[in-house]
Length: 263
Ligand SMILES: [Zn+2]
Image (cartoon, rainbow, N blue to C red; front, side):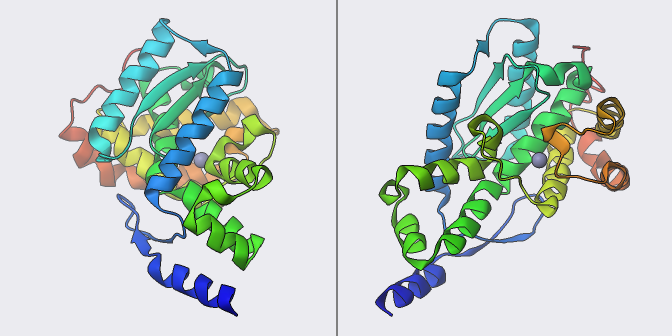
């Protein structure tokens, strides 16, 4: 009973927040500060295991696009980092707090800066919408009241298994071999936020539609992890296409880089 009361008070004191850009409501038991700290720790763990690429034209492009998106993302508490990791897997992620990684396997699909901005904008969209925190919140609730209370008080009180699960919930699941994908509505929201971000950063939003066309065509019947939570890529494409006119003003008042340089 005491635990239940504590849980209720935790839930009442946690807030229903409004997601920037999309305006959707999100219920969170975690604080942004905790999520960002966990994102930072998960990022360090991943970087220890992966081979980072530095000084290449591609890794410089990742940093350049990242800086442009960060400049329009309005996330003062994020400590942005943009790393390129050597891997054939066509993937990318952004952990809470702005820790971005792009795998070299995505370059051939991206083709140009705007294609890469589509991928990075989408991943950054997940972080801005705090989808990691939302997945963690769901896990806490699923894991039971006492864990939820402990986790809401401080993640440091969680044991290692639960910590790993919590980190996997941040979208680093592929690397950890524990896959807890974002939901389809998360993916749609990240697409929308990503489209706004890339347009404000100066990349032609029509290139997002072109990117998803290339990506779904090239991946054929076996979609890579990056898009596997979207069984229907046609819907995604049509949804993005319908949104393009809404972000044209953002693009027209930006630096208007078009599709940018080819990769
Ligand atoms: Zn996604």
